Image (cartoon, rainbow, N blue to C red; front, top):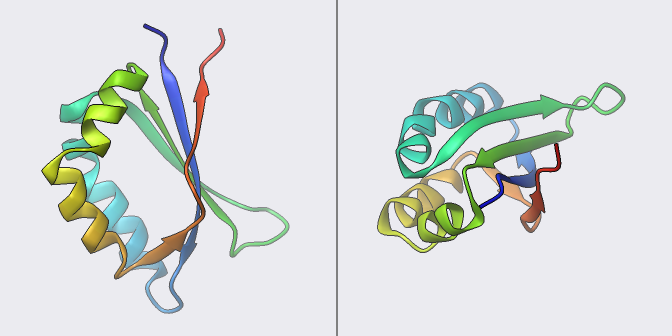
Length: 95
């Protein structure tokens, strides 16, 4: 099974930027317990309002199991308080 990268462009709600980043950091252990190996949030250099949330998972199967589970559903509801996002993109990690 190949590692997979999940990339999502996120739009942090005005006035909630710090809360959104703290929430992503605080909830990371839940994703790690499900098979996420690492995550990063990157901010655009040209447009400082542009953020990408990049997650690496041990396999697509691990991510898909997480995506369909109750913990992720709860976090999805919470996430709406801090950000909106574009559709998720999934990539095989090529080394």
